[in-house]
Length: 126
Picture 1 (cartoon, rainbow, N blue to C red):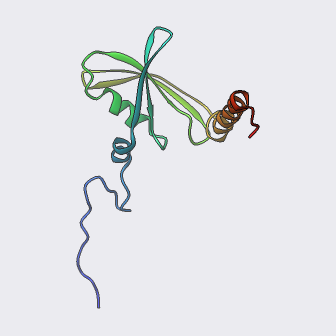
Picture 2 (cartoon, rainbow, N blue to C red; picture 1 turned 45 degrees about the horizontal axis):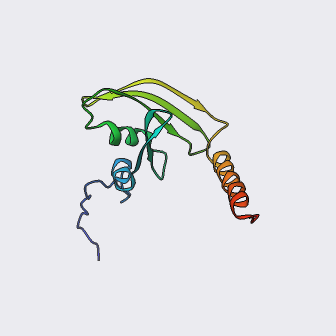
């Protein structure tokens, strides 16, 4: 027996029943605001390479113009974009990519740094 019913696509879902990138970014966005050397910084962490969604999440409701740096260290590359955001407008001022930094290279450096810091603080070599 054939099933002739058509499945309706849920909002925020693509044809493969997975969350679209914007919806996914909205659900898992982690934002940290802090001061560094007299400059206010906001870091936005996402589980996947979604720098566009990060900049949208940060600047969508901004009224004052700000220049922001969006960086992506995933996927084996290091991608950087400088954007001007404000009044619902996003202008890309510059973008660049380093194909030799990011992904596994970056992960290894973080793990090595954490292990060295732990050894220094706790005296235990991981």
